Image (tube, rainbow, N blue to C red):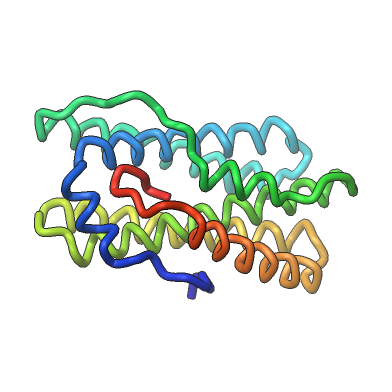
Length: 193
């Protein structure tokens, strides 16, 4: 369903269990950034009424996810650490096409967001299946379902505001590029991406 060309190395789950505080911290900040990214799209494209209406509840949901991860940290006697640079997201953003129309920029952003959600969904699935802690498995299953919906929404919005054949071709370029990113980045258990 997600179309990702390179699955996450299964050893990643084992690494996350070693650094649970770090992965939960990174996850919390990912949720926070997802909320602010949606807010930014709304602020930049207020005339896209259907998109604004679709993203407004996502902002609330993502912020709610941030709060859920904070609560999980607290429940486990862990604390929120410092936010770290997200190499994965920064590399994806470098692939965004510059120039073009306002709609072209919007489609690029929507495709980047779709890819981030797709990779998050894939990783949450791994956590929901392979963590040794059953409560955390359930915790991450809910996130997996949510991210799948967000991925689909961003793809649908890209198709709404861009030429569908161009969006499809560009999506494949993003998938190829993302595969290269995944091969180049070190496997780290303290990062969601």
